[in-house]
Amino acid sequence: MEKTISAEKCRNSIKALEDAMYVIGGKWTLRVIIALKDGHTRFNDLQRTIDGISAKVLSGVLKDLEQNGFVRRKVDTGIPVVVEYELLSYADTLQDVLSALVLWGEMHREKVIKGEEELV
Amino acid sequence: MEKTISAEKCRNSIKALEDAMYVIGGKWTLRVIIALKDGHTRFNDLQRTIDGISAKVLSGVLKDLEQNGFVRRKVDTGIPVVVEYELLSYADTLQDVLSALVLWGEMHREKVIKGEEELV
DNA sequence: CGGGATCCAAACGGATACTG
DNA sequence: CAGTATCCGTTTGGATCCCG
Image (cartoon, rainbow over the protein chains, first blue to last red):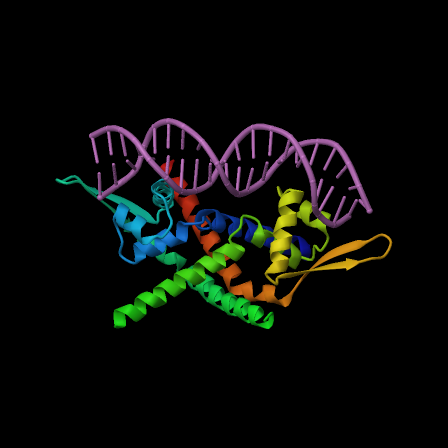
C-alpha cells in the first residue's frame, strides 16, 4: 500500500514537471521573460535585446506568455499607437526555478571547462 | 561602472540559463533521468516506462546524457549481452532544479484549474 | 534485447515582403 | 512600430524493417 502511494506521488511529480517544462521549457520563453524583467517592454526592443530571435517566434512566445498569465499586452491607442508588454506579478513565482537553473548552469559550465582542460 | 558590472552579471546569468536549458531543457531529458532514478536501467524497460518515447529519441537522449556525465553505459558481454544505463552522482546536482520545477508545476496547475472554474 | 538505417510526414523556423 | 502572410529549407520524430 505504501508503495502505491509513493508511486502515485512520483507520477504526480512527473506530471508537474512536464507541466512546468511545457510552459517554460521552450527555447526562448525564459529569455523573453528575463528581457521583460530587464525593462524592455516594446516588441522591437525585445527583438533587439534577445539575440537571434525572429519576429515570428517572438510573436508566438509573447502570445503564449499572455495566455499563461505572465504578461499583459497593453495597447495605448494614441498617435502613434504604442504597444507594451507588461510583466505581471505571476512571473515572480518563477524566481526559484530561475535561480536554480542559473546556479546549475554556472556549476555545469565550470565542470565542462575543467573537463576540457584535462584533455590538453 | 556599476551598471556595466551589473549588466555583465546579467549576461552571465542568461548564458548560464541557456547552458542549463540546452542540457536539460529537451522534451524528454528530465523524464529519462527520473526514470533512471526510479531504478529502470535497461533500454527497453526505459522505453516502456517513459510513455510516448520512441527508440530513436530515447537512444539520442541517452547519448546526450552520457556525454554530459549524467549516465554511464555499462555493457556486460556475457550471454546474453546485458546493457545497463547507470545514473552517475552528477545527476544529483540537479536536485534543486528538479524540485523547483516540480513545485512550480504543481502550483501552476492549481492556478490553471482555478482559472477554469471561474469560466463556468 | 539494444539499438541503427531508412523513409516519410509534420513541425519549426528563417527570410522577405507587406500592412495598418 | 508591431506585427502578419507567404515561401521554403531544415529539423524532428514516428513507423517500420533490420541486424548482431
